[in-house]
Image (tube, helix red, strand yellow):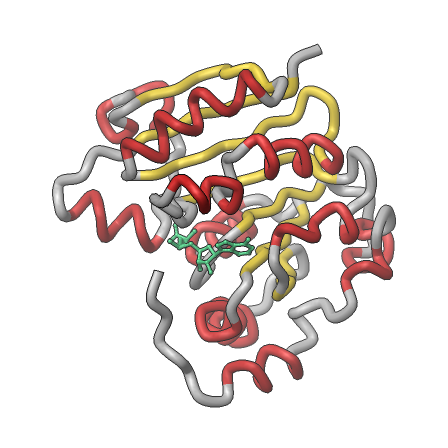
Amino acid sequence: MRLKNVPGSRQAVAESDLVIKQPEQYKGAWAKKIFANENPIRIEVGMGKGKFITTLAGLNPSVNYIGIEKYSSVLIRAVEKAEADPLQNLRFIRMDAEDIEDVFGKGEIDRIYLNFSDPWPKDRHAKRRLTSQRFLARFAHIIKDDSLIEFKTDNRELFEFSLAEAPAAGWEIIASTFDLHNDEELCAGNIMTEYEEKFSALGHPICKYIISLKH
Ligand code: SAM
């Protein structure tokens, strides 16, 4: 993905109280220390400008949400929105999800959302895909038993790869579709992401799976 540099975004993100600095220090204690409650924590990994997670947080005040994004130049858009209209249950981390096990404790996370994750089309980059076995193993450490990962993409090749990776990494596919917007059951309550709006407007069908760890 090509990113536009947004001048000042790195500093603005670094200065915002809504972006948690040195997140490793809260490992195992996010609900208590950051949100001052015992509510479940749900994260979006690769949240971009944050429309999806911000909407979810507004709709569900009894769930804590954390948006994770690698680049300040996109994260800044979510931070600006959240500063203008703060939500007690929404925070952000600027980090590479490769280090996610350093930041969250075992079973600390109640649900993981992956939306329109970068496809990394070259075979030699497959390990960077957020739905690869390597990332699913990291997610398995931080997610509660019986909790879910929900993944959406318009990229058919990435989706087929992801459908094969999940069972190989010990996850069970609970539901899947190659055409979310025409699947009444899976689309109920669907919240569109920025990329979902863009690609569905171009006529791309949206794929989705829901997986949970096999016992
Ligand atoms: N989820 C948003 C949406 O659906 O509109 C943004 C999708 S965009 C294609 C993918 C985002 O994931 C980018 O903003 C990228 O910087 C972020 N990303 C990719 N790999 C990441 C990683 N390893 N850790 C954190 N963020 C990552």
